[in-house]
Image (cartoon, rainbow, N blue to C red; front, top):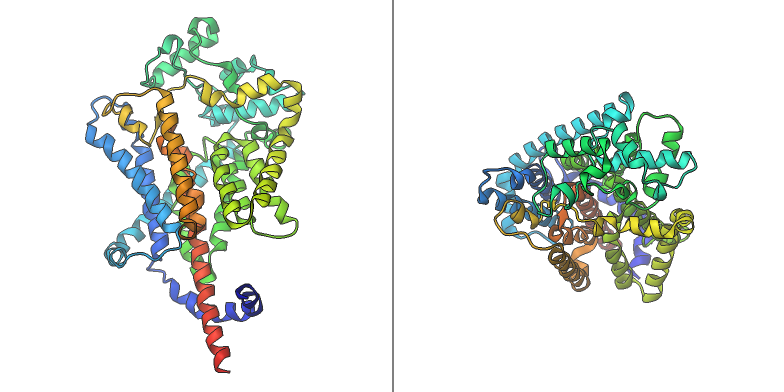
Length: 483
């Protein structure tokens, strides 16, 4: 009955909501949820920029603990901002005191974000790939896309690893805890990586397995197939697609807010300066765009009923990063629908995942499967802004990778339990829970959390839109009851 009334009075409700929407925002005030997102952005930005403390000689242990506390507080602030619950009065009183400070912080972070946009655009259109790529994720993706155009299988082209090192000198390869780097857990310094790369180019056997040529193709097939048209078109590098997708998500999040809140949502989206950890050097924005679209369309009917799980599958076919979100999607469908619908989602997502990978599965099943699990099987060095920070800063001794895998699994079970038991209180903030287990992982670099503020902004927009609509419907009901 409530759904019928919402559909029947939706046009009137929207008109009734306009005065209320204008009261939600003033240019000198950010709504509390948006302010919490700005706070979370700032905290994650600090944690990411301070991650080097753990590897810097002379760092004090309180500084290391501060990095972890800042990262945890930032994620907590973002999750709270997206939950459809009322803030305690004490928080509202505190915000009145901090409002000006939060607003200034938002403006400063916004300037940083636009600087990232401008710098990435300049790299995308003015500089060749050899001067643009500073991360092997981007450089290897470019090489793999070129192999597809040449009619070769990237998963069986380990010899191109050396070619990639020569063509993209600034994109240093991933070091392994073996060979000349040793089996310890402290990451090698930048100059050591440069020297080892030079030695590998002179004689690969001289490095004794310090690099793994298979890391050239350690992602699913869509990670490079998506960029093939850009390489074919002769663009200097592949950053333009990432930038265009990032701008699209940015504009969509601002537009998704209720009309009276769009200036505030635009400022909040622009305050996510954490994108510097991903946009110029990695590809998480593609995953975030596909995941947000799948989540937004999950309850739609018609052809969108099938598009949503297909987008989830394509996100998983792009990068393993998206795999962490799958349990939360399936649990959400199970909680809001039935097991048959959950099975349909899983089947469609699996089909969409296999579709771009199928040619390579048929051609080289062993190489394809081994490549996908290289991020888990290769002896990588630890890094991150999660609990690993305590060991990187030598506040706690290092544990074996299996220990962190167990902690990550326990954290995953805990947050899934939280989602199941507090589903109504979580709302769309459930998407952010997928990032919580990563804080307990062996590797939790800042780029994993670079777009967490935008996930929180999506959830906050949905909360504000629902409240405005609910208020308008109540006024409409009162009006009809008196007439």
